[in-house]
Image (cartoon, rainbow, N blue to C red):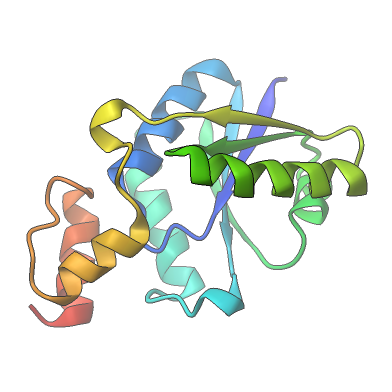
Length: 159
């Protein structure tokens, strides 16, 4: 079985994330959305809220599941019996950061492969940080996120 993990904080999940999830589900037999606790990131949504949203949004894809995790990605990969990491690249700056992460993961587990995917050009500039900033000030994020995410952002920011 060709299995891959798409890890991230998904705080919140954007259309760019969803684009990669949909496309990777066509490339792999099983895709696991690995929602990271990431305590350093001071997330807007709790881990459980992010897991629930990812499950809701991905429910239409039979070969996609969602799992939360805390700790090293390589340990999560081991626990899921998976050797492939999917990562999204939006710009050159993403590549440098992701390249360092992939190199560190390979040093920790030499059998792990990282596959980089780019989102559709209509989504390449979208980041969770930008979406949260727009939502914080009552801006329209409907073209950046799923309507369910938009509703949750409005509820968090009371707009």
